Image 1 (spheres, rainbow, N blue to C red):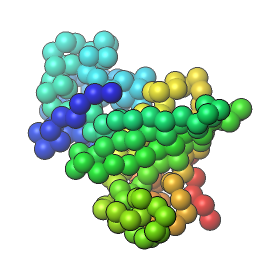
Image 2: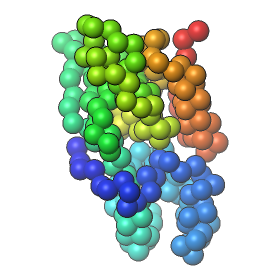
Image 3: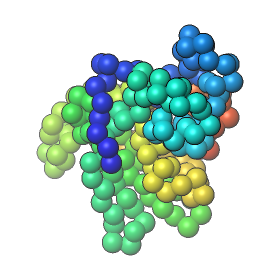
Length: 201
């Protein structure tokens, strides 16, 4: 677990698509091949610290640390089921809203249930999240951050095959589809996607 940096001071690197990253790296007078190296490090090697990019120069690592935020989602707690097949992770967003992701492990696959919203508008009296009300929809990068955290925790050898939003009755299912598909399309363009977002019909 780490600490969150000031989101207003830096660009959250998971907000960038590959063309945007290429544009930034070019503006730093770095070779064109550096952007794909960084992209591969983020989404294939699952690095979330500039110091992990040992294939880059120390000066470029320092520039990334200065300009990019890699710690947008703060992992604050984990809870496992008795049989170790289900693992819940609590994240805190930069605006201090809590969200959860739940990883379910089966014999041949892993399914991750992610949050696509902070809070809930359904108002169910038995649910603490619903009683707090809907705070906001998550950014696409905040959705991706949950996925990458799960993959870092368990490794790419335990393949994550399916990602789905928690609950079929969240306030704005159309938002879920738009934001999750946006992230899926972004990562797929780089050839790094090892899973598909799943939406209930």
